[in-house]
Every structure is written in C-alpha cells, then in structure tokens.
Length: 453
Image (tube, rainbow, N blue to C red):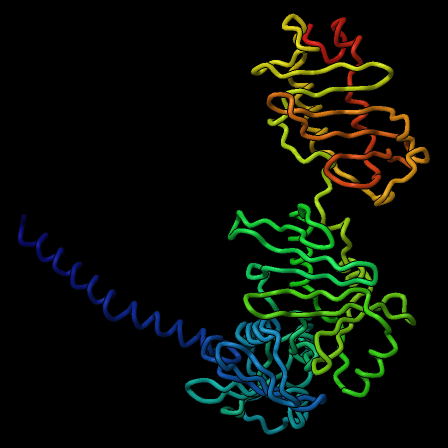
C-alpha cells in the first residue's frame, strides 16, 4: 500500500471518528432539545405521583398510592385508571405549535388571566403547571402558558380533550370490581328461584356446575358471558348523597336479582333493579355505603339470569363419537343406523352401507341439539305439545347397546318444534330443521338420499 493511500485512509478514519464522537451526539442532543421544546409538558406517565385540576367545576386532586389511582378532592373515592391514563397521555402528546407572545404581558387576550383550566403535575423531579385559556384560531387548538415561563403558546390541545373532564369522568365506573378468573362460586337470587354455581378445576380446564336448585351441568359459554358482562358493567351516573340514595332505593322496590360472587375468600354482591318510573333506566347497588349506580335497563335484565339460561341445554348428554347406534322412529317406521368402524349400516346389514358423511352429520346434530325455550318444567299432559303421539323419536346408544339419550319431537309452532330429551326434565322448543335431516328407511334401502349406493 502506498504512503498516499495510507494517509487518505487515516484521514477518513479520523473524520469518521469525529462524526461519531462529536457531530452525531451533538445532533442527537439538538433533536432531543427540539422535541422537548415542542412538548407542552415534558414527563413520563410512570413519573406522575399525582395531579390537580382546577376548572369552573372546582378543584380535583388525584394521587397514585400503592400502584392505584385515588381521587382525594373533592371527596375520597376510587379513580378510573383508564380515564386517568387517557388524560395523562393527552397531556404527554400535546405539542406547542408556535409561541404567540414572548412576554405574556396581555394574558387577557388569550383567556389566560382567568384560565379555564389549570393542571399541576406532581413528579419526582418537581411540579409542572400548565394554564389553559381560550380556543386558538384553528380548530382543535388552545392557548396555554407554563408557570415557569412568561410565553403564551398555541397548542395542539383540543378543547373537549381537557375542558370537558370532570370528577364523573375520572371516578371509578365499574360497578363490581373483581377478577373473574378468581371467582369460584356464583349465586343468583331472584324472585322465583336461587341458582348456585361452583367452579370445578383450574385454568383453561375449569368448568362450572349448577348445584342448586338442582345439580346439573352448566352452559359454559353462558356462565363465562355472565362473568364478562358483570366485570364490564359500568355506571352511567351515580347517586352519592346518602339521603337521595336511601329514597331512590326505597322507590325501586325489590331487586330483579341479587348476584353474589365468591372471589378467593371474599364475597362480592350486587343487587339489580328496574326503575318503575323510567323505562330505560336500571340501578345497581353493592352496599348502602357505596353510591347507587345508574345502569341501563337492558344490562340489568341481561344479568338477571334464570336457571334455563345457565344450564346446559343439550337434550342428550353425550358426544358424537360415543354414539354407536341411532334408532329412528318416524312415519310409522322404526330402523337403526349402526356404526361399524368408519361405516354406518342400516339395521346392522353389512351389505347396506350408508353415506357415512351424512349420517355422521345427523348424529352430531342430534347430540348437539339444544333447547331454545322452555315450555314447561313439569309436563303432566303431553297432548298440547303433540308429544303424546310424537312426530319422531331418536334414541342414541353407545357400546353394548347402552342408552345414551332419547329425544321425542312433537308439533311445530311459530317456527319451533316441541321436544323432550333425556338430559333435561320438561318440555322445550327446539329448531325444527333437524327433522329435515332424518332420512326415511325406504330411501336408505333403495339407495336414495342418505344411502351409500
């Protein structure tokens, strides 16, 4: 390598080191300063220990203690962590568009002599205060001023983001705080019945069982949906005054339902009411010491589950692969579909192989058939339902002919068919389309639909 090339390499190396160690850090620092300058308030959400808001609605103080947000002024109450987080992020993202007045000698021109809103953030490094005035010349802009500077700033804050905030927005709105994954018992007491459910098992394999008023399997999706809805139940408004609370509670009368959850070793209770004077309003009460929560009427009705809502609704308690024989009685005929390995046979005849895919679908539909409505819990007279002389009867059997379940179908009414099943006592209504899937014996025997010929 020539001496000239070596010199050039050394020069290039020195220039690179200079850019790396001097110019690039300086540029990064400049950009950091520029970014910080553009921010209305420079802070990180985790650094906020508390904040105060002063507006036309009064003063509100919120503090963080033990990892939770609490409202201290105007009166102690639990804060809504989501609402607090959204408020702080709005401030974090607020930018300074430009400086409109370097000296701040005429604050009245910008509505800053008597600010519409004053926010003070208490940080580990000190307190930062921002005063917010009138709307700017452009939409979604507000004039603002930092306490540590005389400058009047035009910001990207939108009026509704901050000015509309009140204690109602910041207070906890969840009616019944709990962790649904830790709930082991649910009790629903209504005017007609009391339902008690227990969770069995842990994690993803946990299942719910109904223990009262009878022992039976629960509708797993329905129970989980109930817990989700309870966890998500939010108040639209609050009655805080004890006298108003007591008067309104007396006017509401008896609860539509009272739900008690066992979470670990603690019981959490909420009573649901319908407002007799307002057809869109419902109310929820935890204890007389807490506020009376206004909720939607639809939410109150939806949470007041009955036994039929929560119980498993399959008319046969079996799985499709357990069924080895399906006996069909319809139209004066009786015949059996039997499983032999992957094949289905008519009346056990090895020469009468059927369309396995269609029969498998029929068997699946039979054992998965669910009641849509309950007609009566105790059927003393089957004639009104057409069940004294059923339109069809299906009997599912397993290994060695052991009966797994039975369904009988009666007459149809308003798009549903009356039916009885061995897994549930009573008369129910089911979707009648399953009846269209039942093949006739002569079709199977002659190679018609449902046969394998």
